[in-house]
Image (cartoon, rainbow, N blue to C red; front, side, top):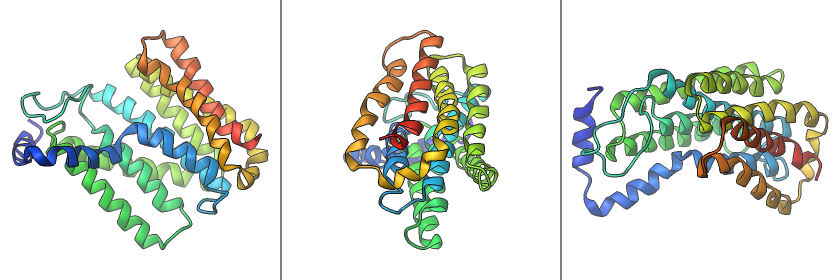
Length: 267
């Protein structure tokens, strides 16, 4: 059963007192973390010179594409998680590939490639440790099979390599790759979550088209400007909090994607 023995053994060996620590470590791969951290890095990374404006935009495009990839792959394979009796925490949705393993690979792998701080070797070493820790916690919590996390890391690595390569000459290619993944995800899943992610990729493409000539202004962005992120994230999170129709969820995603890319170049 996709490596249930490994999952069962790891989950069964975690003492009750360590479960909160394992849950805290697995949060390093939460999609919610990436949805907040990536826009923050796009808005403020150039100001503090940890990312150039173009690299910040590439990071945003790649990570959004990675989230869309998770939706597409989970819907394509539709493999279930380990039995609830094995899991130490509750987890919804399909299990293959692991969304945490895929997302953590895309996010931290992109950071390792694009950040200006530290040496490349150090950045990739840190990213590798974080990916391994998050993948391990998914097994330890009993919410994924070994095949799930392995496939997630592989899929995330391949997507990062592809998206960074195609966007090296033109940043907009990162957003185009995200739109392609979002389109496939919506076609396969046809859910409010998929519609929101699809909308965000559409909004990202449109936002970049009107913002790219002024992206250099990110270097002068005020730290207070990030307050404008709150309403954008609230709109994008609505379809995940309350039941909404697919058109409304798509519209919410478009507002989120467009606003995150465009607003900081106008503040």
